[in-house]
Image 1 (cartoon, rainbow, N blue to C red):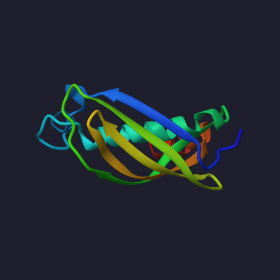
Image 2 (image 1 turned 90 degrees about the horizontal axis):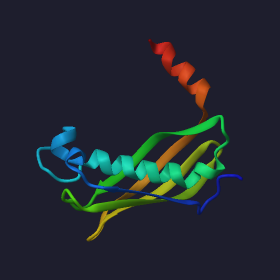
Image 3 (image 1 turned 180 degrees about the vertical axis):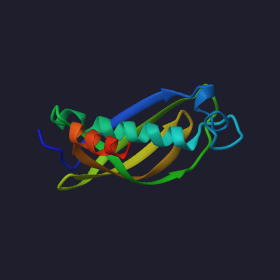
Image 4 (image 1 turned 180 degrees about the horizontal axis):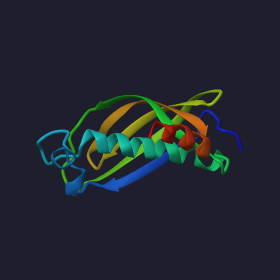
Length: 128
């Protein structure tokens, strides 16, 4: 199966205290942290293309343009949806949205590159 425009993925989570801006160091309040929302969105993007990914390949995030639109309290469920909007060689572009139980909390775009997993790791670890 090839990665194609229109493929969709979803990820969900319950907001816990460790997912707050205060806990992750991105702010001082006990509300869902932007970095955690971004991770949820990236997870949805990975899920969107998972079934088309060959065993030796993976995807790595290379670009994000995200707006965090509304705060979410601890104890609320959140979910993200990703849809493939473009495929340009090994670069995949996604439209992302995130929601809590009250409505949309985030949106944006994301790009991921398809890489050979072991070759990527080998190159990264030459930095040591």
